[in-house]
Length: 306
Image (cartoon, rainbow, N blue to C red; front, side):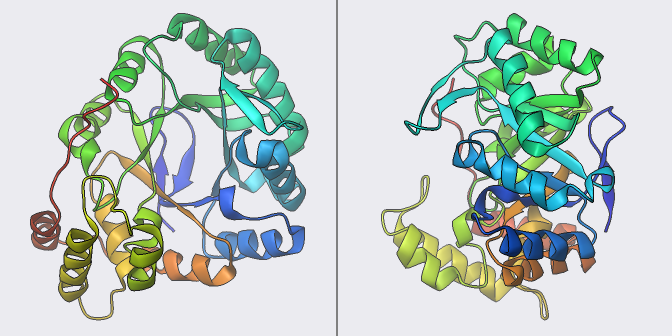
């Protein structure tokens, strides 16, 4: 599978990433899912301390402990949580980030995290302190690179200007083209890589789109009403080239922009892994097809988070 460099770092990750939030709690099942991804050439696994209040990191650590050296692991910090109460609050302080990193290392059973992301961010944060925390962890060798996971243009631009980030994780898909307007080119120009999460838009762009539309989009999705979504999905299905699935079309679309280092998909079964990894064996979509997809969908912009 093709590998892409993360920003200016020495990290090279597969163009498809397994998001581990949906792994569940069964270690044997999680092992099968991760093995299927690794066998297909995926080398990048994404988790966060908040997922299952630390249990997701623990599960991942158990599954990959014999494979750690061949993997790139991303985790996230910034949500101060109490597992017993299943409650959390936003805390981007240096104290919490450093403590959070140590907790994540313990749960993952490793002595370093490859890519460490701030799990959110607001304009009210003391961002200088946050950056100082990440820089100190990098200097200590406890993390190899850092960035943020955010959809807030104002926060992203602040970190582009003031921090040495190598990556931004953000939601991006055919149905959520908000990053195209003002973020993707900015990050590419600054040699900052994008990890595109939600490329299948909650399954609305998958091979099971019809079922997912009724289940997950009865009240609409972002700026689209259900009827609009049904019309767009149908048009995309008609546009899909012969022998290309909707999953593949959706993944290849987000990977078209040069800022995207990897598309992050979740999976709760081996079958879901297999439905997505086939996209890695397909040539990049043509400029003509890319333009036609953009004609079917319509760009929406960030109205909040300003």
